[in-house]
Amino acid sequence: MERDDRSPGVAGYLILRPRITPWGYLVRFAVKKTLGFAAAMALLAILLVAIFANVAAPQDPYKANYRNTLNAPSPRFLMGTDHLGRDVLSRIIYGARISMIVGFSAVGAALIAGSVWGLASGYFGGKVDLIIQRIMDSILALPLLIAAMVIVAIFGGSLFNVVIAIAFGMQARINRVVRAAVISIRENAYMEAAKAIGARDLRILQRYVLPNIMAPIIVIASVDLGAAILQEASLSFLGLGIPPPEPSWGGMLSSEGRQYFERAPWLAIFPGIVLSITVLAFNLFGDSIRDVLDPRLRT
Image 1 (cartoon, helix red, strand yellow):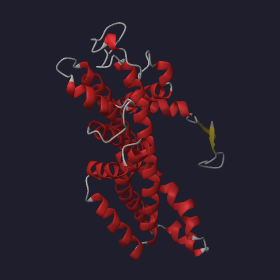
Image 2: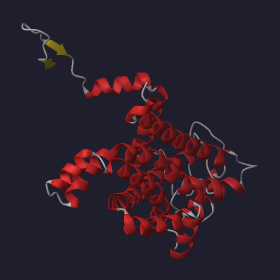
Image 3: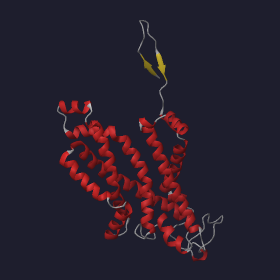
Image 4: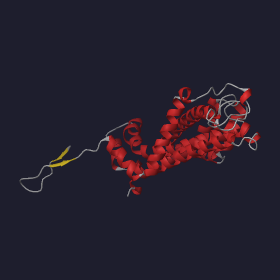
């Protein structure tokens, strides 16, 4: 309980207010943002499946079994098998691990790069801002998928190259968001007071600027996670993503899904459904986080 000693009059009053626990905030979020909470639970389930893929997968996703090629969904193979007899469900589960690794790694790298350039651009301004923003303009001039395709085509398809290719295009938008947030707080009184007492620029950025721009950073990161996963699936669909035999949702849609769709439609239907649910869940969760962290959108 919290005590409030503010007292109107001589005698005063003792007001006890209940302190909200983390579980209380979680319940409040679940009640006010039902879709966002449902999306968070779905993402948590997908993340757990990706982490424990070796336990959750009923079959070996790499092992070919030519006696069970293109089997329809059944109690043994819940989502059927592909043209090599591999279990589709197991490959989707292992594909979730690839998607989560690429999504979190790409967004993390983009956040670091975009935030650093955005802080420098918004805080120092002048020529620093001009040079950085012209570089970001050149990056934004290319669509994300085209830029990623060029980078992967030059350096080759691998997990590391795919992450770098996706992060390269995403950093520009993050840079713009961080820069705008820094500019909005740059002229506040506490910033001028920090400069007046002789605080160094790095100290001001760490102590006063970065904590006050965490809300928009968290929001754009949650939304960009879905975009990064979709970018990876697009690259794999075009044959420029994670090379076989690693299972990838986009690769499953491309290689097996297109070639055998008329004969075995489950090869494209199930990976497409999982990919759509994951991206939709990230978008719904990001919108809910934005509503919670932005005071202008609170009801």
